[in-house]
Length: 76
Image (cartoon, rainbow, N blue to C red; front, top):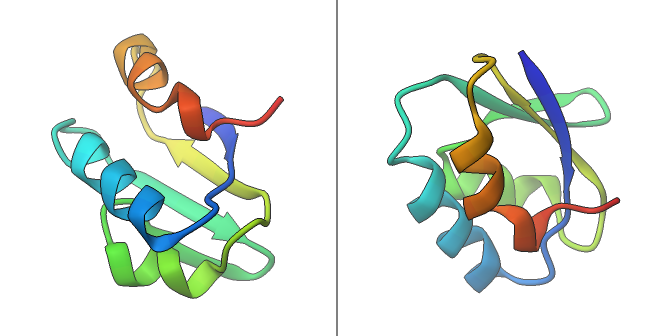
């Protein structure tokens, strides 16, 4: 399992992010506060809000290619 912090500025970034992550077979969740949504759900992610750090949890150890694909949304 891997955790990353993601931040979106607008709905277009969410749409692009979901288009990238839905290509991967592993399960992923996004969490902000007490809310947890499927990382492959555009509406779910939009409900978490923009310009806020969101925790992405990937339920697989081998996700280096995914990390490269979504690097533009990751925060330090």
